[in-house]
Amino acid sequence: MRQAIVDVIGNLITYLSEVEQTEQVKNQIDGFFDILEERFMDTNSYVRTKLLQVACNLCDLRVKFPKRRQRLTELVIGRLSDKSFWTRKQAIKTLIRMIETHPYSMHGGELDLEEWEVQYTEVTDELKAMITKPSKRRAALGDSMDLDAPGAEDDDDKDISLPTDEELMVLQSSKEYVTRTLQQRYYADAIRFIHLIHRSVPVMCELLASTMKLEVIEAMEFFVTLHRYKVRVASVCSSHFPSSQIFFPFRILNMR
Image (cartoon, rainbow, N blue to C red; front, side, top):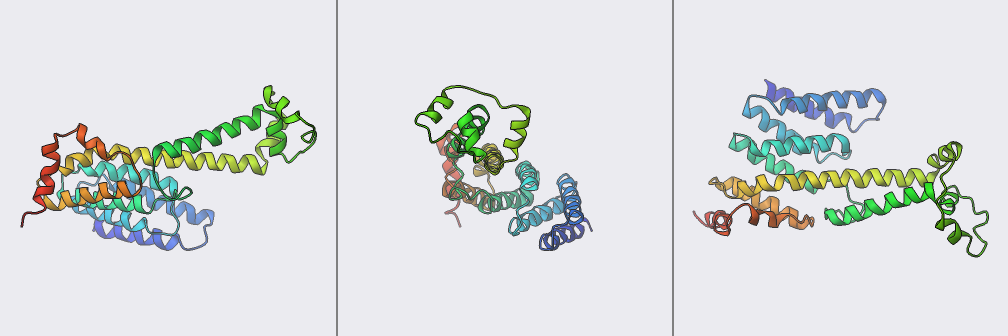
């Protein structure tokens, strides 16, 4: 019964994601996501497995629900240690799908943490400069006064000058500042998602050493996906297991 309800809720979210996103629709979607998140702790392994299947299907929606997606990723990672083999196997498949359909495609879709942190630092520095540097502030506000004078911008940039409350309000409502703020938030979300993926790696290393062939195959596919998206964490396995133990599952795959 609970499996059917979970499936219906997934279908309702799919349907609502395609209609006009009014405040009422958004509230309904949030309510349905709340129910799904609660079911991750269901006592029945069949319900948990069905829930992971639904979460996997939701990854393919046109609307990505980035805030909810972060929380779902955390919950899916938690199910990698589930006592049920079938739940663990589905958790791996769902996590792989979450990586493949992630919404952070601004820089080619790769998930190299260092590159994202560099971008985040750059945009953060730009925002600070808009506040502390008069020339940057004027540029953000579209004011070209005195900027044509030789050395005017360089002289301004040597000094720190904080804006008045009124100037700060105007600056924060400017198109340039709002754009940079949205970019900063976007980079921060991407970095948090990458950290979540990193957090799953030790558990996936353990699953590589599983005696269950199907589980090992899914774990291998996970690391192949990490390599494809430039996630630099696959080598972490070597610090958790001896090399002979890591490569044992690969020998199992050749067994009939």
